[in-house]
Image 1: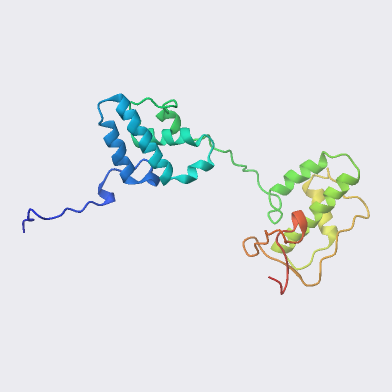
Image 2: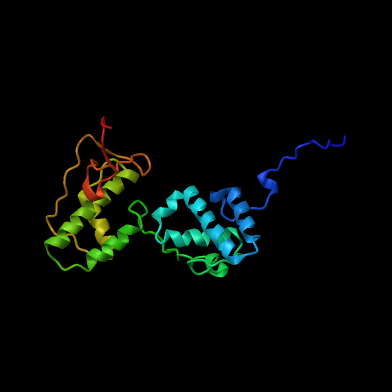
Length: 222
């Protein structure tokens, strides 16, 4: 059956050109294409400024970025496929630079010697090992031991002796960190419980446990 002359053809985004910057929408792309078609460069520049104003109103969060005005003009060039001859107040962005991938972040593939404590424990122990003997170092060891005890209770059994934590500190540090004799840890409340990460989001200002106790939670309290 042949379509009548009055048939309205529908266009879907999936059938159209892919947007370089979807956050601005297809109408901005149409504006940019019209600007590119203007023969007079001065007029093109004038209309380009108007399009940038529209882009700014459509993407107000760009104000949170540094040099946001330049970023808007960069976005204009990107929408135009870098094919836009105007007198921009900023240098024209280079496609090879904009589209270049960041250098990959090297992954630490060194095995974790104690997974229930996490990889950062070894870095903290390395830091403590370099501290001179004294009250500051003892306080650091005590804070770390309390944190390690908490992590131990999250992933293992319900109780753990302080001596076990002290032995782990010395073992994981290669005996570079010696726990001072007579060091005592604060007692754990009888109604205390520890949740695995993701089950207890105690990140508010009223969370207890201090720097190392954000996952600490009292039973019966919200």
